[in-house]
Image (cartoon, rainbow, N blue to C red):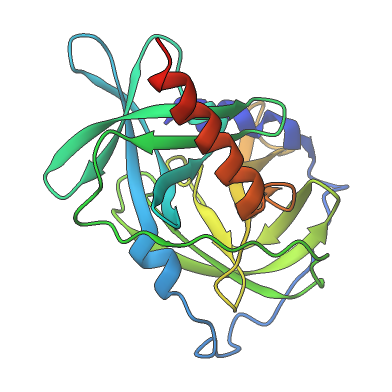
Length: 235
């Protein structure tokens, strides 16, 4: 879980000049369809050679035609470990198709077709997001088990967005969905800020940074997978 915290360093600010966009947390969210987030959410575990789990993160299981794959954060792939996906009571190896360390996005293919996790159709939203727009994700924060959260878009940039929601170490790699079930980004980090009464950075788990998937549409992802499968079949 430590590697998720390390990724949060990008958000260090002073307590006085930290700004947020507030929203009405009492507003009903019954119109938000969280089924895709819940069904496709998977837990990813990094194991050493002696089968010791040293970290865990989250991801989501998708399909494009007959192709099955997982999207997660690139920093979930820890050097010197094997990244496995938990499916029911078993774990299976995953193979990296793409590791985009600059954007913190990774595409993985599990060694088998998962039986417990539900692969949902991969669709993305390439348009700019409205501030205040409701989004949702499911993941495995800390030791809470699979959990789902809704939030609001607080800031939207070309490649990144910030949402006011909730995340902890372990949430990293969870795919964020809009209210039409389209993937809009993946959780990459939470904000850290300095507190005047403490010399140590303080977590702000309600300010969540996401890497947007607008350049990773279904055709682009499919092409990456086809190239990877071709390379594996070549002598």
